[in-house]
Image (cartoon, rainbow, N blue to C red; front, side, top):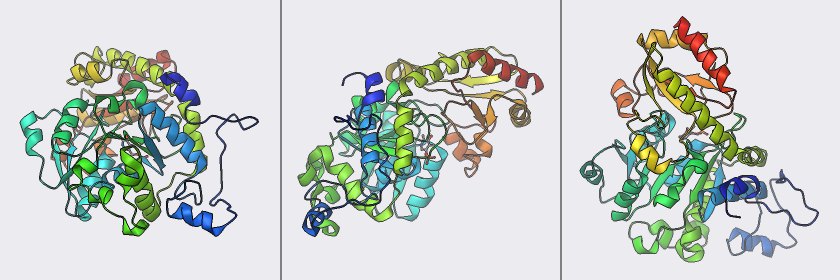
Length: 425
Ligand SMILES: *Cc1c(COP(=O)(O)O)cnc(C)c1O
């Protein structure tokens, strides 16, 4: 299977003769075996097979395999949310006493996870602006740095990460680059092709695409050489006593070490599983991802261009607009379109923004982005309300910023709705 549109529809699941055409929902906690010896081998990771759905479930595996194929990775796993995906992705590499370099323009929930909760676990973070100089990026690394993290298109700042530059910096320091690719999806950008090692997703957004399920995914490129950096990553290169002394990098190679370790240790102990029913919805969403992304991008560009020339609008930010600070990076990394999210400010600041938002009829106010329905949010008042004003600026969010997630409704109705609400702002 070669092309993306085909992988969206058929990737990760090939039914045999007489088997269901749609990915079956295996709604079962456990799996039956004839002998406890067989079962023991599964527990010891000596044989592969299903035994308990906290560790692996066929429905989830088919859907993870589809996302893995879309990203061009070697292995993947689903998680119960995007938050869990980013937590696991980092925690699989860094523990107490370690350090992570992170782009400051990231999703508010991820920022809080890193800056508050993971700091409490003894992990240190240095935040750098995605457009920082090479010298600033270099200066962020420490001897105990274990990973670099960024978002392809930051939610909601909409800055584009120079993936190649961040990957080169990470690799020069012998650590992997993790990229949250939620906003562009693999339809618009495949970070692994630019040197990224690990890709994460909130499948909650465009992958599900209909606002129906919270979920996440981690994809490993299989390219990071753990043995070559054995001193930094003993968790991959020395025996795991909690799993009968398995050495992940030896047993699973570079292709499988990361995801197997993440499943065997983190999913086993922390249990943020994706339900089979949820995985099914994600699989269904993926079948139209390529069509929906094209429509989201087309509609969003039309909205951005319309707002840009509107007299009541102070500024518009959309990676597809030549006026965007990230436009050059968008042309490099997102030549076919970026995402459906547009941010802008209204003349009259915070109050005008509130009046505008309540006047919208088609675009609803929701703490959600990136699904078929148009929706709108004021991050300073919602997703990013725990951030101080200076943290907001670092994250690329001004107090007047309105985040509009442009859906796939008819563009004429979307623009008419914006116009009537601007009229009342
Ligand atoms: C929404 C989002 C998350 C968190 O995902 P949840 O499924 O809500 O936990 C992480 N990263 C980005 C870029 C997001 O947009």
